[in-house]
Length: 434
Ligand SMILES: Cc1ncc(COP(=O)(O)O)c(C=O)c1O
View 1 (cartoon, helix red, strand yellow):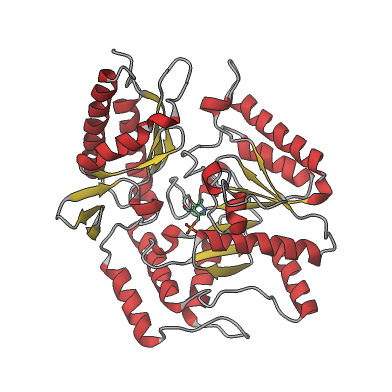
View 2 (cartoon, protein in one colour):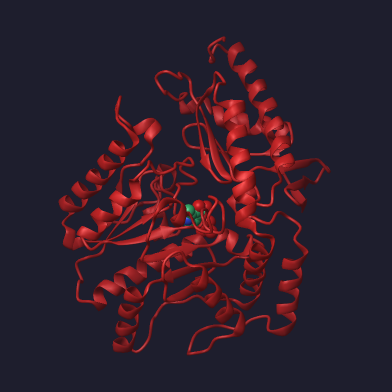
């Protein structure tokens, strides 16, 4: 499929067919596909200062202004911002900072990093090691040693019969505690977590999860990194997913909607304690030997500044608080009772509809049957670009500017695709005839 142009929440292929983008590209084009102000911000910055770097004690206004805007908007007090070009690079940078920090404060053995099974943090070597999805490891000789994974907090699949959400969260925290103790608390440096897991299946933390996880991390003096690459900038109905789920990170990573994805840029925010460690070690060594040619590149930075201004001006978070509940309730009203649907989950403007072979047993189809890939194809046939996730889950993460009328149109089209899939599966005797 060749995508040739975009406008609002839609894109057009090279044959002139339009599609509603139900995942904002890759969970990122928050302001849709035709924002003039962002295009102008890039052009204006290119004319004024098309490139400058931030090495050797240099800086420039877009980098400084954007840093200040991010610090002012952070969910918890943050001290400094480091810029990179992608979520993966930002997470790799955070891992390196954590190692550097622990060396700085005299804990050279405290280096292991915890991710979660089904967590997604990117594909560079450290971020892919953090990621907990088999396809990002298999045949790549990953994860690297020193990267370990704890359980997925997915209540629907993970809970024991009769276990409450709170009890399940307690068990998740116990599993984490056991893991840290088994590895040796003096060897575990940090845990990375998406407030709501995205690419692993849109998995929301069970009630009280982060409160309990953070108590374990604090007990063992393990840093918490919030990977806000998807959740940041309004997606879950608050400015940050950390606010929605009660996360108080030491380090926060963001990207994607930081520039509405119009140009590549990502950021790592660190709190005072982490910054002090980094600064002291850098003074000792003489330099902080990490940074990219394009760290804080003025053009993406200018676009990001304009993006954050637009978010404030149009009240984007309030918009998500209005349209998000409509999206969530419509998804449940339309699909929860469907014979193929096991779970509808989500918050704000992120959601997933999971298809199952057996609703009572919560059993998925055999992955070889590629059920969600078939649904994605049918969605395309009916005018929606959709995204399949593990466990035959269909993702929803539309541009945040999507209106209620556009939600209705999108779900009408997805519903038609799902009905067509159901007919096909019945014919193939894969679905139970209702
Ligand atoms: C939560 C999260 N972290 C990190 C990344 C990696 O970002 P990038 O693809 O920009 O490297 C992604 C990408 O989808 C993501 O969803």
